[in-house]
Length: 135
Image (cartoon, rainbow, N blue to C red):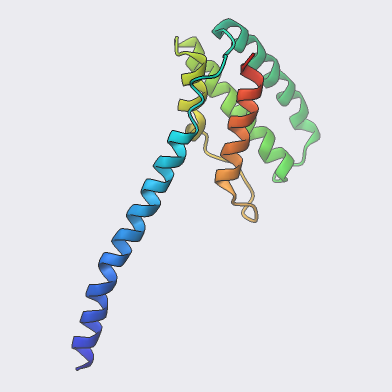
């Protein structure tokens, strides 16, 4: 009787886990689609590259004064990485809007273990890039 009950519970639990997993997958895809600011008034690629280069140099200058592993340091590393990815995409001829959106999740967030709010960090990165690169 126990084997039958265990098999029955596992059989009913498996579809529930599959549904839960697919909901998580589709939620991530939905968030990625809502983060596509294609309708904004973007700066030209040349202007954006100049702004990004200035930001990268500025952040690089701040890093020696920050303590590795702190949230401020990790935030600076995340921003610099994201800006470098956008800059590289612009060099390859991608539009500013596409470079901003397509490279967002290419950033492997550098963060401390006690602050694993990745979605909030991605939103912050996107918001900062949009503020920098729109008119």
